[in-house]
Length: 177
Length: 177
Image 1: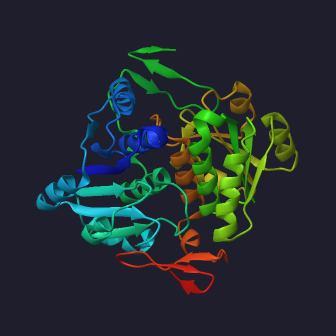
Image 2 (image 1 turned 30 degrees about the vertical axis):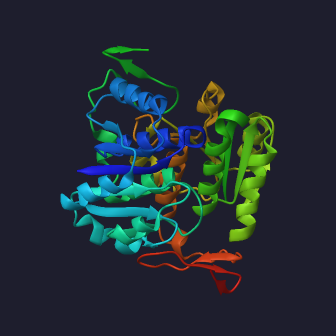
């Protein structure tokens, strides 16, 4: 089971990036995103609606503080993977992380509390350059999962894309549009 | 040479996502981002400052319209790779794309003009689920490049991260801080 913990959401600044983080989690086959920080019903609703239309069992939940989330999943035996600019390079630690089937993947947040670095089992860097928590999560999940299942999984949603060389085709509950 | 073309930037809505797209392009070793749509000096400046501090030769440029950009790079013999929810699955087309050393990688934009689908040499889908152009670009570049060079390249910047298991260490022009 893979849970993504999105730290310290701020309604004004992070509305689109938190939505992207959540949709990436879903598309790359995580089971749930937990968003901490400011409660943002609009962002939660956006993700839930997309998840409903496109299918699957992905959950979007909110909790004010990260501490109880980390404590709970540690107690359940999940490995805590913190994606950060710092940490050890993904290619070096990936094999070790793959030994764990249950992950809590933590992504920041502008200012990540130092407690996260300390409690994480793995602080993992994706390139050591400043870029994007959305990108770090996608590359991590793509490498962790291998990249085939994400393309072949049938989410069973109302909407489904038909692969094609050029142009767009979406099947909507059996009808193309 | 790898150029990323970011379509149809809107100052209000896209300021953070366009910044993320640009920083991902840089971190995963593209050479330049060209942003079309609304001119946004603030977003351009944000990326340029980060690129300056962290080193390398990444370029951030603006052009109002995408058509001349596509025309120019087609004439130069670049392969046009359009990342979209539609298109063919990345694992299926990657080997073919890898035969090209010069790519113009195109990412949307809410509404991608149909001309893009037609002119692209490759319309490529990263998972067929709705998620994020930032994530699609990162996963594409990670898979195209292999994932080692992005971790080992010396950008020669003023700032540089020292990999570590826990905590943060940044070297600033020779001094750690």
